[in-house]
Image (cartoon, rainbow, N blue to C red; front, side, top):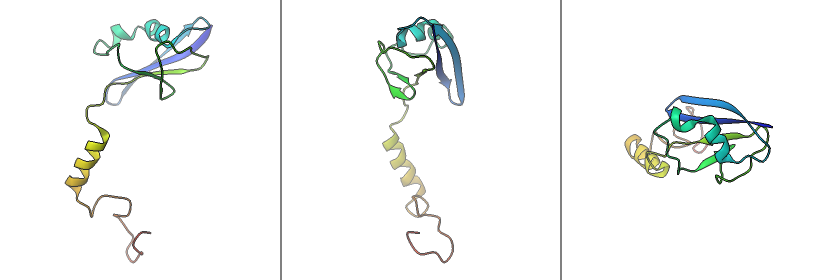
Length: 109
């Protein structure tokens, strides 16, 4: 028997983790079905891409003891678009790596 953790976030700042015991050679899909995610999180789409330890994985991927299966919500906004919009709102002087310099410091340090 192997023991894996299935975790998901149905809403922002809300993470649910469930430990599941499975037979050796179980797949990622077996872990999700054993955790009964569909009944606990009805809005979740079965067709979405799951992950193991933060990396995208196939539903048929075999699991090892101690793996962490992660189910993610779809992105609401593309991160590149959000960054551009945030930069436009903040302006060039208040955004970026060197925006807040110490008084008397050289530019770029």
